[in-house]
Image 1: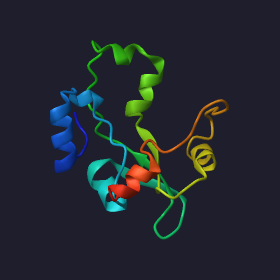
Image 2: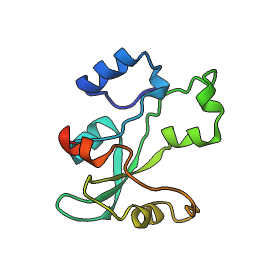
Image 3: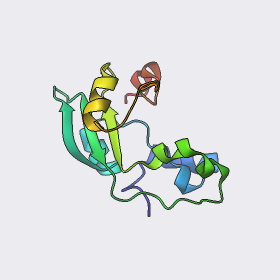
Image 4: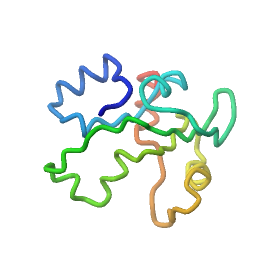
Length: 127
């Protein structure tokens, strides 16, 4: 299994990295159309706007995990391929509020909830 598709630029980087497909982790998307094409289904708008600011995205085709790799022995690694993910706009700052709305039963005290990709880099790359 794999993600819906991998855009050509991301595929070039992934191929050069030597990483196995189970370690490919999407961290940015240009817009909602890219999320739908490359990541998964938008199941809920958590913070509406133009464009929407926070989205709950469900991934149906998660990659097959190679459990021989040491990273998968870490409890925290499960977040890399969580079936439901919070995706937020680069300028959105209310991560904790959106995360709590997306995952109301999860205790996030003591956790850092933030963008995976640095905002400056995201803006520079047009994400």
